[in-house]
Image (cartoon, rainbow, N blue to C red; front, top):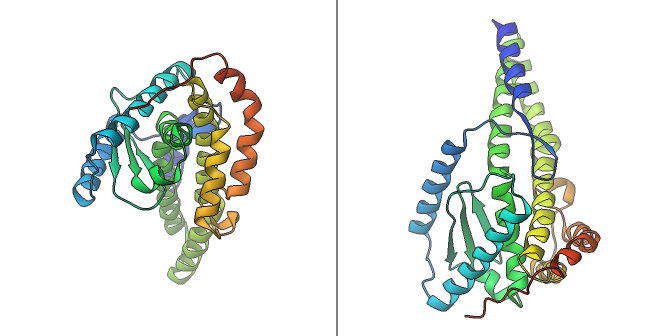
Length: 263
């Protein structure tokens, strides 16, 4: 029975290997329809529990930038699975942040609108969130979590002593958190940064403003946890990575008309 379970888990994970839009190997096993439903339910719950900003000028601006980025993303990554529709909402929240949910749901905090100095800086973050959706990072993270739980189950099956079992599971939980979950999340963030940079450039937003945006973020956020213990790259790493990629993004930006979402 134990051997059969081990074989089933191994086969499931091996047959689920895929490539992200950037060519990175990944594991995403949850059906897209299931994830889309989860994203829709979560987004509706957030809208019920938070204050949604209804100012027409704010919503037109965010919607215009999002539409330009989605169109550019479809051009830049034609093979990536694209949601049938996108929904973006602006929430009253002083944190300069945004988020993406499976199924094409994007939330933008009012604090980000205050921090961003121009449309291109706002496009930096929205493009980053669109990239998370295109790269199916939510699926990968959920698959990862399910895999860790399956691993813990196997440990329990193969361990004779209840005391030893608890100790090993506790140790593996710590190891999984630092050795699998967090680095994967940082990999997602880096991939979304670089995809988002190409998307914003393709949409006509000056890619150099991505660096300026994260410099503003760094000043606003102050001290950060060590990168080793963080799900996100630290600001210096993120800025350096974006600066290295500007040589690729700027030629793309120069071939398209400048974006204009003046409302």
